[in-house]
Length: 256
Image 1 (cartoon, rainbow, N blue to C red):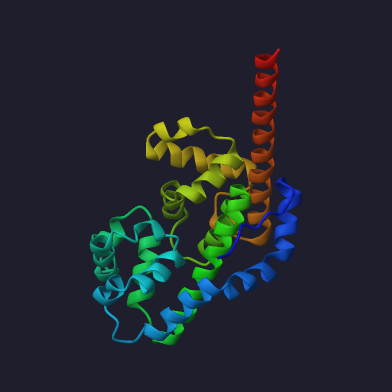
Image 2: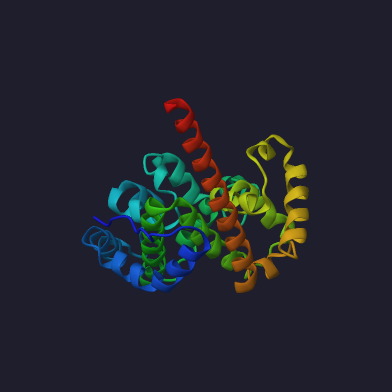
């Protein structure tokens, strides 16, 4: 089984190292025997006739499909996932479009709009490997996993035609992505107690002030992503160091 990827240093310096080794480490993750068996099984068993019922009824296939979208925790919620897969993605009032977590919509869209099994298998297995790589990174340093996820999400945001306000609402409903923005903006956990509209206003205002724009066409560029991620990592490192120093001071007082 794949092991944690430990960079050895934290903060922005470690992030630069991770960027340099990412391609090699993703390839190594794809070659891990357990992951390779899982992706091969998915490829061999996905057909143009595979239904939502078929997918949720095959644990091995479902594990890869959900893992590709970071939804592996829903592996036991088969009835719900089937409803998601069968939901009308073109109906704004359908279940999948009413869910605030848009990963379910991505899953349903990929499943329903597949042009052929091979193309879908390529997309899903590639995403599954990338997600497993990010999990390995997270076992070494969770802030790097969140940074990688934010990069990928924002690159996708930049290509969409949805309004910026719509995508900001998605940020608020996406726990992992929200954590990066919230950390970069210096917002505390109390922010979640505010109304959603107030949170939206504060996030967009902070983005204008700190990132120079609240438009995902700008935030989703390489420069915009780097500005967000490096600020998030820098502040996370400061917070971690401060907490560590406080803990050390407390131990010193207790032992004196």
